[in-house]
Amino acid sequence: MTNSPSGADPAVDRLLQRARAELDRVLAVDLPAQIAAGALVVDIRPVGQRLRDGDLPGAVVVDRNVLEWRLDPTSPHRLPIADDAADRPVIVVCNEGYSSSLAAASLRHLGLGGATDLVGGFQEWLATPRGSSSPSCRRVVLNGGRREQVTGCVAGKASEESDSGVLSATTTTKPGACPGAAQ
Image (cartoon, rainbow, N blue to C red; front, side):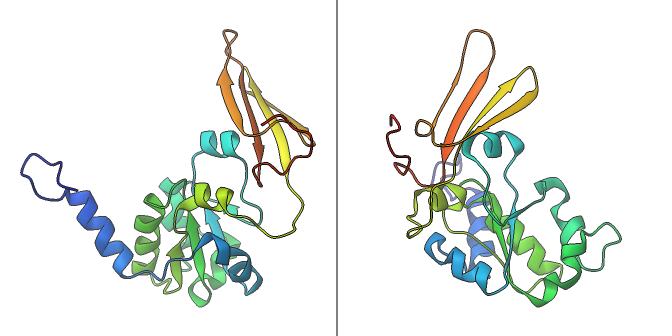
């Protein structure tokens, strides 16, 4: 991509390339096997994206702005799950697999040699068939900052903001998997 004023690749693209060169990135289809083998999955998506698109089962949510402090095994501010993070794979997940590459490279620089990220991020995971596992469907309604959740199979993924300011997001971890749901 050469959209910068100088005609060269944007610096952030070069930074991303260097970060990815040191990662053994994980494909969404391989994520369940990585989890079964003991990998720590860390979801760094902002709360708005998690509310809109749903949670990543088995992932630990850590805000991007504190990721290094929470996962550095030598940090006094680390999470208890970080105590052995240097000794096992750590798979960072963002929405589309860009900021997670930069975050994983940062973790590697802190000594987490098994840090990597998920190719395509949560959106790729969401679009990847996951065998015969049952769908996880839910509806989340944000109303005046209050989160309400209705579980069960409901309509396919959608989001909208009404005139009343109510945000409604319906998600499924397996698109089209809700029997009888309007898609």
